[in-house]
Image 1 (spheres, one colour):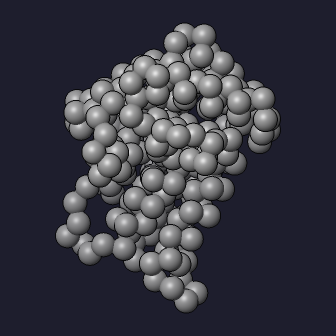
Image 2: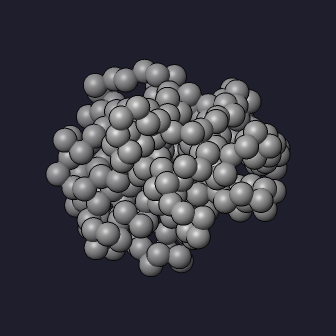
Image 3: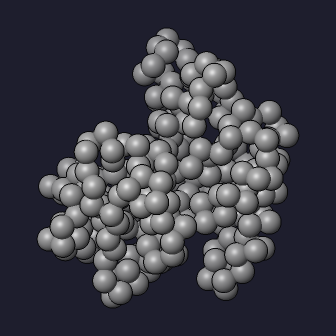
Length: 236
């Protein structure tokens, strides 16, 4: 079993889910008392959140590279970043380390392709929904068409993520708003919807919606386990 390195704390609520899912998946696959060989470097999300909203992505990249190098030095065989938004600097992070970084969009796209879907709605922070680092990767590398909510809905999602979910607050009225936005995306032709922020599954689950939902937290965590349990000749 390879050692899974996690860069967490963005927020710790979703990092907790990563740890749980990874260990549940290892036990599911290996049985008995098996759990994952893993180590996590957890950042102070206050620092990250400020840099995000000030547009200081270079400094945020430095923090992520530092975290990745600490995890690598700690003995990890692979790294996952436990958040969608901070994959904005995934390429720079990968260049700074010698071990593989498993990209959350790649893991999600592979799951989508298994279901034969082509047009997907994307929910996440405004950074993830509006910038090209995530949508572009899905379209250019995997041939998927990605649509996003309208501007008002994007701002609403962003506000709920940062003012509620990242603080561990779960509100029924916010859940209703997310369900309405998902229905709007389906009406616009989305065959499925990507929950492209690792906090969203704390609020919404498949049971809440008719359209297929892609829980990036669960997909990414299970993807890491699959990689960790393969032989040395595996490829990303």
